[in-house]
Amino acid sequence: LRHRIASAFLALALPVLSTPSARAEVFTPVEPPRAVALREVITAPGPLTSVTHAGDARLFLTLRDGRVLILQNGAFLRKPFLDLRGKVGLEGEGGLLSIAFHPRYAENGLFFVASTARNRSVILSRYQVSRRDPNRADPATLRVLLTIRKTTPLHNGGQLHFGPDGYLYVSLGDGARGRSDVCDAQRDDTLLGKILRLDVDTGADRAPFYSIPPDNPFRGVSGKRGEIWATGLRNPWRFSFDRATGDLYIGDVGNSQREEIDFLPAGSPGGVNYGWKVMEGTTCFREAACPATTPPCNSPLYTPPILEYPHDDVGCSVTGGYVYRGTRLPQLYGAYVFGDFCAGRLWSAEREAVEGAWEVRDLPARAPVLTAFGEDRAGEIYAATLNGKLFQLVSPNPVDTVGLFDQAAARFLFRDLHLAGPANRALRFGTPGAGSLPLAGDWNGDGLSTPGLYDPATGGVQIKNSISRSPVDVTFLLTAPAGAAPVTGDWNGDGRDSVGVFDESTSTFFLRNALSAGLFDVTLSFGPAAGGRLPIAGDWNGDGRDTVGLYDPATGTFFLKNTLTGTATDLELEIDGAGADWLPLAGDWDGDGRDSAGLYDPATATFHLKNKPESGPADLVFQFGTPGGGRMPVAGEW
Ligand SMILES: [Ca+2]
Ligand SMILES: [Ca+2]
Ligand SMILES: [Ca+2]
Ligand SMILES: [Ca+2]
Image (tube, rainbow, N blue to C red):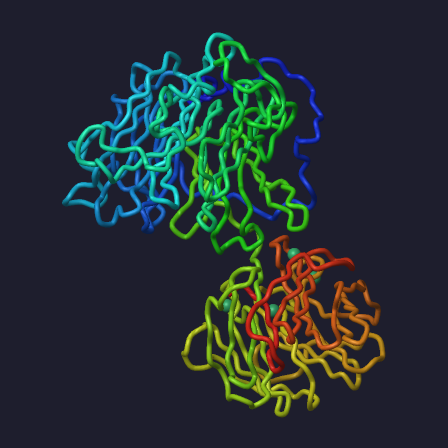
């Protein structure tokens, strides 16, 4: 059965003819791939068509067969939230297509459903949650807002999303009659091949249970449907809004040449024409049967895609996704994640800062028969497949972010993302002005980093296993040379960090594997003979053990070692722009399993973090905290 359903989807997606194309618009992924993995969450009892949330911790999954299932605490609730089995048409690409919860769902319990009827029409309907059970919809509350007649069971569109303006957006395909005889996507008297924008609050209590927003581009225009927001789409199967910016991203499935991502910036007045069927991506398709007023191919009246790819070897049918705005994958923040239905390939696209060009990277994970992406309340992204598999995008390795210790205030500030913004957490720890130096590490091996303090005058160490105002968990004295600077790392690869010190006068590291007083396990002398060097530690080669390094502020050079024996330096590098008072730190900023260097400029409160183990510009530059001395950087997975 699964294979048969997949074939039905594939039939329309597979190329009619495969023409090699090498136009400049076709993206070529840049290196390296973003470190992203797929964690299998659950397998649904049938093909999945969408994933969304209702503003709380539950995930709502739509099955093609008509069921809406609730995933809560890792398991499906036994009874469906809504069950439209037997009421939806399953021919071709038909079925339950998606749902969207009203922005004020918590108050009004309203949600909207896109599905196909047995007669191939696309139906937009509204339901309300049951008054007695928040996990059950009340089927008797059904109201039908729109019935869009279609003659084929293909190109339904069917994605629903509320925009940042509170209006309901609805995507509709062209009904798959675009090749020769019909040009619905370019006709504004039909809703096919469009994205609609509806006010579902005004007029919500009587048919048709919606109204046309006053600023819709075709409202009141003779011969045009006022519901239309965007035109010239073939099968905008998936679209989404960036929850941070309100920008609209549309994955428009192509014919035989090009899969495309279309874009509409927040604040657009609408009425944008994306070109189908005159254009397929940036190539010319057909003008047959289009209205006389239809612009010719390559007309500037068409808005080209921001991204497109050919079918040859890459994929066959784009599955539009989301801009990642969660916190678990700092390496993906702000990137648009999308994929291909057939190959199950996943990509991220980011707008390059200087030129504004879109840079695509491979995500090294595959989800064949990828039908949809979805977001949870926190902005974490999921991928769903026709095989019923639900995956969550996760980092293959813990990702470090930065923190600061303010000596004068005895206060730690922690940040969860590699970008400017307020502290996600703060902790008062130690005595203001006491001159303690900050530590950060995963002392108990639970995967989370927590702070510590080192007193260079006494060798006293204080360790906490949580970022809370609980008592200090561990205290002990290191018999270290006075004035030595602390380092933290997992020297023996047992999954727990411990402490060491670097004595500048003898250029020697003293490292201990246990969080207790006692003899040092490692004594290591290395490094150039020069004053003022600062110690760092990290797993530079990804072998699971941390080793040490030195930073020479005078020359802005890092000297890194991959072993804890010998005097040789394995790697030397510089970060562009380093100033003499910048302070070093190290962490795995991109989740690839290897730590790399970073610098903090106290004068501007700016971090400069590098992912590659080579000299050059920093990959991540952002401000955090307030400028001024006495603030020291730390790194960890908080
Ligand atoms: Ca921990
Ligand atoms: Ca260890
Ligand atoms: Ca290592
Ligand atoms: Ca890394």
